[in-house]
Length: 465
Image (cartoon, rainbow, N blue to C red; front, side):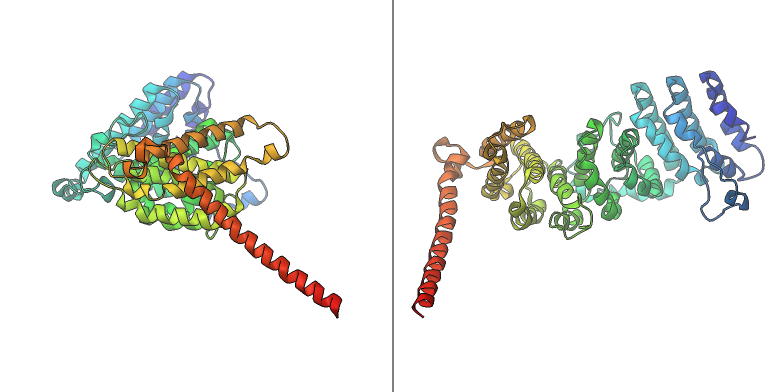
């Protein structure tokens, strides 16, 4: 009976496809207990890698994922019917627990459907499924609700659910039942996303970035256990510039990870990647980590409440500054400068925002001289075109404007004591910059003079002999 629906699923008329979808729950409920699992395997094109029929050696066959076809269906009403059908399977099937792992990735896909009404509908459906899960497992959720447990990223309950800003259509923080359901099954499809977010096929990369973003919103701090492989895959994706949607989603995913994951949990992975000590066999690891750090840091301070400080990120920022000094500045080029500027822009922008909200940002203020030095080093990387007597390309001009803006923005972070008479921060630091620069040049000049003197004495001694 399940196979007979395949013809309806690929029919050219939307009404026929919708009729097939409406018949699917009835077909899966027919027959003996738990036989519906075999029907669903055909629907999603599942093929057990441990079972290879003898016929496959002589006549290879292909599997079609009909559910994936419905996600990109050209008909809006058909897609809406599909998501309602998926929700019905997860609420009405007697053996729905066996299917949750396969169905959840498809129903989450409705959160980034092109049609806004379908997005809202999908969010409501997932909330209903989560509520049903809470009612069926009341004892499991009783302690969490009664004891008022708050994860560490909520700063002991200081961060309320209404303060958490999430991508549309998530108007509020998902209910606990929905979060736990997605959390239980995210591991089944997350590994497949590692390849998809870095693929060259634009459509696949967009859907993977969307699915990753909404998965993080539901899984929250439990994404910590997947960071080792996930971050490396995201480093490649954040360097992609061809797709605007991916270029927007991946930095936001990094900010979400910074929000939910403790700095001490991801610090080692990012700092070592910047130093090229982690996954160094990939060409994109160091540059991707350098570009991603600012978004991770901004996520870590995003929910800090007025009256608090940024001490929980002190070691993170200190190690980043040290890593840039040790490994990045000595190999500065145009790409490195672009990535470093993006990280510094995120750090400076969010630090200013938190200072305006009343957060103590003195932890960041102590590193302003280093940030100014980094920006000036990035500026020197763009002199290449001047040395070649060529006009700066448009992107280089934009980067120079961004550098000048960031240098001015440093004044908004600096305290009044470090800027006497309302002077610009750069004006206050220019003397130190010149002294440090020329003191180093003078020492180098003295060493060259000494080497030259020794060489002349040796040459004179050779002539005398």
